[in-house]
Amino acid sequence: MNTRLLFITENYPPDRGGMGESCDRIVRGLARAGVSIDVVHFDRRCSEASHGVTSSGSITRVPPDADVPHTMNLLWNRLQQSIDFSAITHVVAFGGQLPILSAPIFASWIRRPLVTLIRGNELDAGLFDARRRPFLEDAFRRSAAICTVTRTQAEKITALYPAAPLRVVPNGIDFELWQLTEADRARAASWRAQNVEPARRLLAFFGHLKSKKGVPFFIDCLVRSGLADRFHLLLVGESDAPPAVSHSLLPPVDRFDLLPFYAASDFVVLPSHYDGFPNVLIEAATLSRPLIASSVGGMLDVLSDDENAFLFTPGDDASCRHAIARAAEIDDAGLRRMGSAAASLARNSFDARTETKKYLDVLEEVSDAENDSRHADGVARLSRRAR
Image (tube, rainbow, N blue to C red; front, top):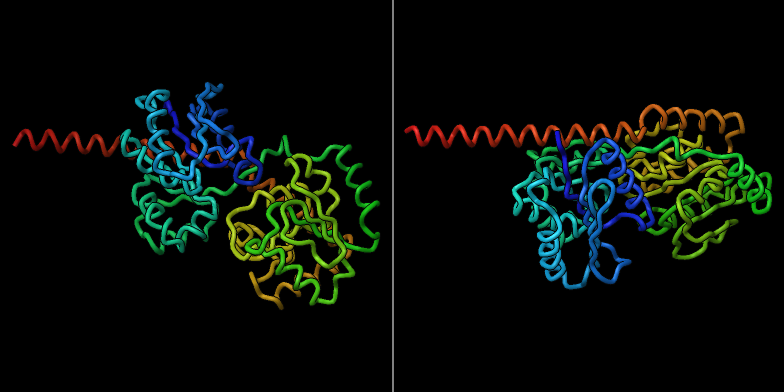
């Protein structure tokens, strides 16, 4: 199958963050598998539109103007000039408000099947936003396949739209790239010796450290647990306010610069009230770091309480304090056992090559269904003419 994608996204390098990382990983994996990809990136960093050739296709960058209809019409004009639509086999919407708005329309205009990748916030926010829900529903209705990263997302969509063609494709990770060097370990030991009292466990938070991610809730539970003096918090990312407990607060850093901080940590904490499938989850597990996590989204799908994580009910104060107490009491041998179990989970379940293969299977299934539909339409037309 000669596959070529029109791949529309709001998150792509040089964007930072989990969404940009996931988009880059998926595009690179498909390109290595021989798929040609014309990326359209609504790029908030750029001031004017551009188009360039890449090793696997092309990339079109457009600034997302406040006048969305104007942006979309200009983009359509540009794509007609720069993309050979006859070569496109699928249109892909990678999450986000603008891709989910534009991809169903563009797919219909060029008469190609739509594949919608649901990542997290576009579902959590879109279903309850009167402005976004109509075009989210339009995408679901027009999609030949809808790929979610968690079973919970698939179940929510199916409950509302029983005919939706759902697939669950969890995030993956490239094990060859994501591994510790001796320099990372040395830097981790040095940083911890300088910043963390020897008797304290180090709890690490990476990424968005705001309310919907549950970080203020978790810190409040820590204070109320009476065990705050057993821990030091490492917060790397954007934070509303520093916590009133022992902590280190660092600004966002590039992904691979996080490796020493993962290595320095005893637990990585994911206390979200709701979530998709955070890359932090498998990044921590791959490096043998157990988690303290709410039982939502990808954490609920893959983590096992007392085996590779201490889980708690999202937003439940008593449940969260119980997880904190268990983390305070675990000895070094228990911590190593949980870390080993986390690494085994990652190695067995989240290879990026497996993720790529699942997306290739989806694209092939959609193509086969499209061909069957065209054949059926052709037979029907011949039958009508015969009559």
